[in-house]
Image 1 (cartoon, rainbow, N blue to C red):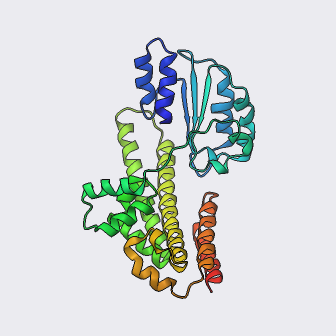
Image 2 (image 1 turned 90 degrees about the horizontal axis):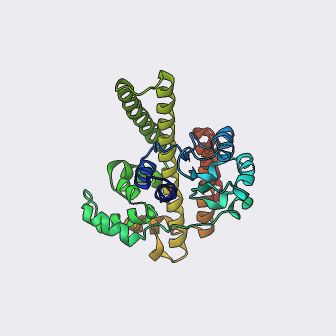
Image 3 (image 1 turned 45 degrees about the horizontal axis):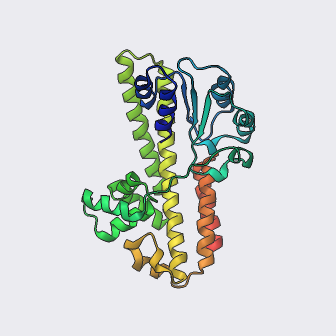
Length: 315
């Protein structure tokens, strides 16, 4: 939606609006007046925000009459970057539009959030995801597993499909068992596969004539692998958090709101003598660990610390 919005802004201020729209909609876009900033790691680099957005916003458009700056995962900006961006947000040049994308707007500084016009997007309801999954005729998935995948995916259709595949089912098993070692190995394996696939694709582009140094290929491949590893580990932790959320619901007599609908018997068994508050605290500890992983802490140590903290809470 941000790309489409940016394309309309640029098209409306261009002599050839159709051509401007076409180029702006490409990903990545070759349009010189569309700057799309995505974090290369867990956080945006402070200098990148300064150079590519704050300082660049002072220059007039290369063509047409508008410039658009999109900051993806805006919550990944450090406080220093957000504070530096404040003046540009308060008094942007008349030809500049700034779009901040965030799945966690509460993580933005209040001074930033208060100067933006929020546009909220609700996730697809579980029923809509279920309907598509039933049409997909997911391999071997029954109605309860499809219902569980739809709720655990929080409106993300591709994630729901992943959860119904071999990798997703294995990850759910590891999450319920809290098998941290297996979860970490799965994430490492997925990261290695992603790194290899990106390296192969970049090498093909290089052979086709695209200018890429060996270092560029290596760095981009490693970033892709690290991102995939972290994403899968984060998904595993979110599944563990969802399990504790369901345990708290069942222990409180709210079995009708659980996400893991295909594992109700197991949930009832584990929740029989469980304090709901302990399960809620466990879910909060897992969410805290997910935030720590964004800071590039050691994943092994973070999971080891989490296991001890969970044992203390659930004792």
